[in-house]
View 1: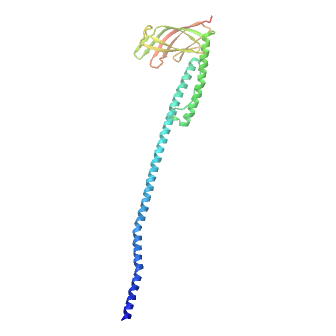
View 2: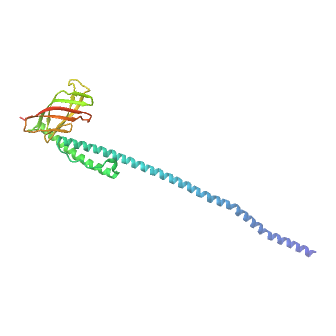
View 3: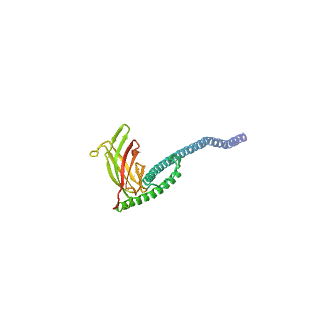
Length: 262
């Protein structure tokens, strides 16, 4: 009996010892199963942050590209304005020299603004500036020669013009200007005012540009109306020219004579 109890007690202890590792293993499995979802959650969260960062990067790059395009357009606009302004100055100088001297350096041959890219416009601007500088020097020298002739005139350097008739027409409006007398130096260009009434300011008036060129041409509003013979004391000429704004006509007659330097 005693032996049986002792055996039973040993069997009970043996069963208890065998069951302990099984419970521990079961707890470890539960712990591993519980931690697994956390790992998955972390892995899912990380890509979403990366996507957000990528989105911010894309948005930033779009803003930079837009600014670059805007700056490029602004730069092209400035170049176009400079190109147009320099072209106009060059044309003005060409016209003045052509009128006062009788000839002028040829204008640079450039395409229209819309046909040029930024590099070509920059090159054109430099070419126009060079032309303007060259013709400015020519105009300054011409003015100096005119001043010298006014002080010490050679034969044929001075003419006196008598504008006997001048009829100005603008559409349906017409008026006859008062006669005028003036003296011009060779190479000089001057504007006179034609008026319906010489004594009072009148809305019926018109500017008339008269030039005595260095090549002895008489030019009115840019049109040659006569070539003057410096050895012939008197002469006359008729003219029919456009007004300065090309909105009407001026038709008239004038007499001119060489002023002797004696």
